[in-house]
Length: 349
Image (cartoon, rainbow, N blue to C red; front, side, top):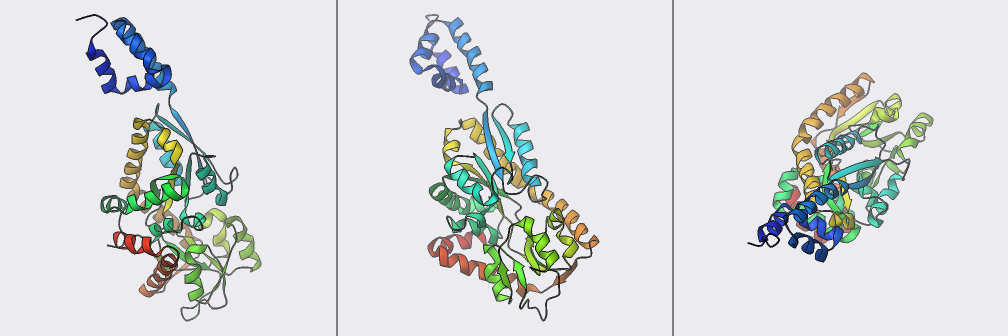
């Protein structure tokens, strides 16, 4: 066999995925010529490839809707740390918070490619993609959603409507509650002004309360001055903002699920190498598997903080949760009836 004509050389490089990287870097004609000039040249190309693999590490800029110190944001930063460690040489993620890009503007920054990733709740872009909120009402697990097709259905819409790839979501099973500075009467919140977001507007109105819009940093002063009588919020992070000082009651059982999405800009996702995408996807599967343990530990910590602060838990009965979820399903069905009809059985089996 001719020294420069060993077809196994080219085949070995292809199987290892290295030759494709060199093709992109030097061009196909140049690479083939180098390989066919002899084994020494081929080894030289391999050495060059090794250098390029290291230099080809993709750097992703992620935007988090809450600052790193916030309880709800901490799992995302923990996951990013694991990605940077386990995908070293392939993927590296850096994170900016709302101080750099406003929480409500981050999803559009992702869509346009200003940032490569976004960690945030679907209700922030409800006007563009109301279907994203269905995961807030899911009772099935993430592995079940991947298996039964629910994840694929939603990902298809994310790609179409938001130019985004739906990697996974965190905070599944972290429920919402109604927190107030004064007691409800006969299971009603008549006349109360509650800080709200779209996911529980209909529910609050059904309880007799008036939903009020304001950013989380403004809630403390509003509670202090009596401008609002309470707020809807997950079981996590009340103390992050100091709200426990003016909070006396927590009404449950918890409703919905704070499914905070991790999205990747679709153009960026498609432009990544297969091994880079695989590493990110594997890390999504990994965090879904360890999430129940993370959630249990943080739930215990957050409940202890609320009880120590003197916040009294009030159980409103099973109907409280059912009323909240029925109102939200009804809201989503009006916005996207066909999609909700198809996906709801897959999320509530």
